[in-house]
Amino acid sequence: MSDNPVFEKIKQEVDDNPVVLFMKGTPVFPQCGFSSVCVQVLSNLGIPFKGIDVLEDMDIREGVKAYSNWPTIPQLYVKGEFVGGCDIVREMYESGELIEYFNTNGFDVKLANPE
Amino acid sequence: MSVAQSIEEKLRAAFDPVSLAVIDESHQHAGHVGARPGGETHFRVEITAKIFADLNRVERQRRVYEVLQEELDGPVHALSVSASPS
Image 1 (cartoon, chains in turn orange, blue):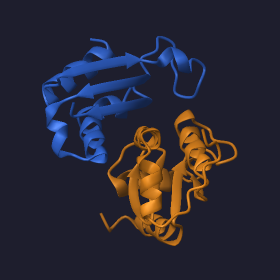
Image 2 (image 1 turned 45 degrees about the horizontal axis):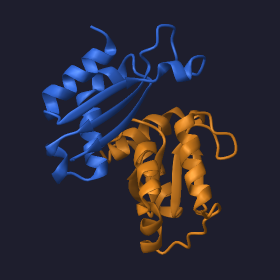
Image 3 (image 1 turned 90 degrees about the horizontal axis):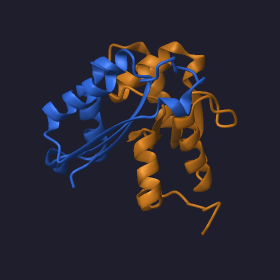
């Protein structure tokens, strides 16, 4: 696993940035519905994150799948830990677990659309 | 055998599910990247199986992906998964 040179780059990103979303497109212009859902969820929680566009870098696109042993994009990392893809992020958001998760990890959740 | 049938067969064999739905959502993505005429590119799987009780969310979905690797490497462009123990 560690012999893949792109892993070092990915590890650097997820270690240097508290919340990282590997996605298709950018947070402003997501190129895929699943990536877009993750961007919306993080935005609704007021969580700042770094979006990494895998469409810009084929090595990262394939590398991140091997890094997490997860075959799809998007992928959310918090404090270096792989949290999940779109289905998991959405499920955790809808059940309230995601807010709890961020709170537990010391993030200040600011709901953009309190209901 | 259609892609949907193949997905269903593999999931039944692997997880002995209590309930299983394989939903072809390709029509919602007509014209998008990865869509093909004839569909069978975008699927949603809803599966309930006792085996998932001992696994966390990530592991549950990882197991489903593993069983369907051939489909994901091939015709299936997007697979949405909801896996629960009950």
